[in-house]
Image 1 (tube, rainbow, N blue to C red):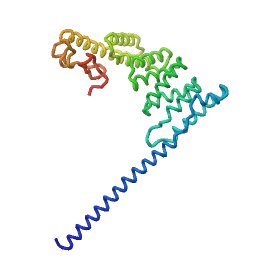
Image 2 (image 1 turned 90 degrees about the vertical axis):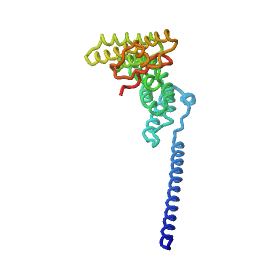
Image 3 (image 1 turned 60 degrees about the vertical axis):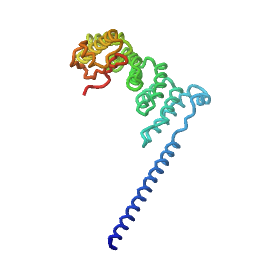
Image 4 (image 1 turned 180 degrees about the vertical axis):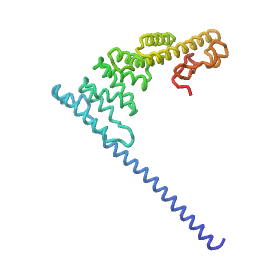
Length: 285
């Protein structure tokens, strides 16, 4: 190896060493900056006195309601300042305190029921929903939002159906009645629940006010009749074989249901070998 080659090798090694050191320093600096930013964010979280303490010093209803308004303004400022991490950890506590001080104010409930689930604060949203239902049971829009919380985030379809039904009875959003039906359809605890959902969609179909509503109800009705048929055959299969079929394919191979079944609402039909119930939460590809 001549002197020039040696110099090139040494130069390359020095450059690589320098680049590695620079990269390591940058990574370390970024990690430090992130820790500092997170610490600053934690320190910037608002201090929220308990509702009990605020009631004790409010000296009357007017002052208590005024404190609720101040907490609400603090929440708006807190939420409006932005958050690079996409989460507002104090949001649930602020809403809880505000609605404890003024349980009849509907706007904090509306805001919280819409926003908290997206902030990964579903438990806080449930607390808010229970208070809203207790304090403002006849608010059609709040009943709709509570139903949405239980359907989309909590996955409690029984409660979702109840609150959607309440919203519809109170003259809430037009989708309330249909969403009540969707929630009922997602119940899978017993075949009687399936039959109840079929009866519901039969009523919606018969009372539809326009062709779009009628078509939607007809599709859900056909879908649920198909689901019920599969589940009834799965029960008969269990009586004959001591177990549920391993899936829809085994039920079809036994000649209990025809092949090529498709859902009118374009859902996958997945038969559980443990429960004999059909899951249709996923859209067909």
